[in-house]
Each structure stands twice: as structure tokens, then as C-alpha cells.
Image 1 (tube, rainbow, N blue to C red):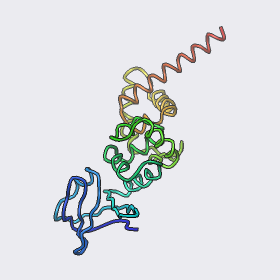
Image 2: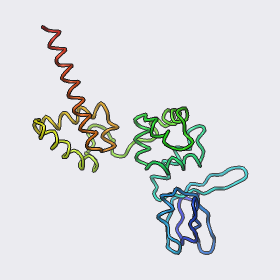
Image 3: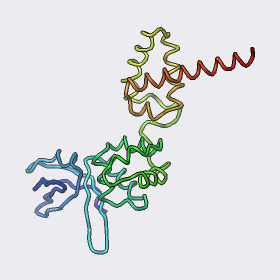
Image 4: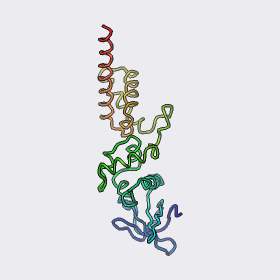
Length: 214
């Protein structure tokens, strides 16, 4: 198996690049993002996946080992070939794909040309447990860098609305425990809305409990 290529970039096209390996040109299929990082005449390293068919040997190249790993796992889905797997990576970053697969987010995959609701559902079903977002080692896992970036902003917004810092932090954690995919996206406004919505629902539940005792 060819794990990676390192050599001089001889050519960069719309969907492929040619890497010169001591006089031998290796043609590699890649996403637009990977190709945009290559410059003719410069040295480059691409992580690769070799697809073997009865009548062909096709090499696919990636800027990172994580991209290649996600590509290889996508190929395990029935009906998903290398071209479609590459199209998914052309639209979404590897971590976004991991999050979508982990949370069952079909809509992320339907944004890829050629993938409808039926195929998206199959991707989510067959990838369950195979792709896990980085940094999700359980409740005791340390906060990710992404969380360190958004959490102080959400806490500050809630304290400005009247909550204490302690209550704000506890509410955020409880709200995102119900909707972990929101924390993975790291959007401050979305996380704030989710937390406030959770607080509203929790308040309604508390009111119902009080009413039932009355």
C-alpha cells in the first residue's frame, strides 16, 4: 500500500495533481482544497489511498492523515465509491463529517452534490460508531480547545442577562449534554440559544412539578 507521496509538484489540474518522484510522475486525485495548497515546482507531501479495480489503479491524495482516514471509512458505506467519498470531503472538513456521523445529522450529507436523503440516511446508519469527533472521550475528558474559545463568551452573555457565573456554567453543560452536536459546531449564538431554551424547558418542568403538588 502507498501510504504517502513526497516529491516535486509537476502539475496541478482541476481535480488531479502530478507528483514527480525521482523522474516518475504519479497522478493523484484530490479535493479542490488539497489542490489549492500545491504549487508547481514546490515539494509536497500527500497522504494517499490506493483504490484497486479490475481494470485500474487509482490514487487519491489528501493534505492530512485525518482526511485520508475519513475517506477510507466513507468507502465502507454500501453505495459510496471513491468519487462520492471525495465529494463529501470537498464540501465538508473531516471533523464536520465526524460530528455529522456521530450525531446522526443527515442534512450535512445532503449538502453534497449526488447525495439525497436516502443515501444520507444510509451513510449515517452505517457510520454509527465508526467516526467519532476528536476530543469526545467521555464526561471526564478535558475541555477541547474549541470549548475553551466559546465557553467564556457564552458565560459572559448569560451573566449580562442576570445569571451567576456558576449557574451559567452549569446550565450550559446540562443543555449541551442533551444536544452535544451544538457544542461541536462551536457557534456562540447557537449555544446561547440552546442554553436559554433548555432553561425555559427546565423552568416549565419545575412549574409543572409544583402545580402537580398543589
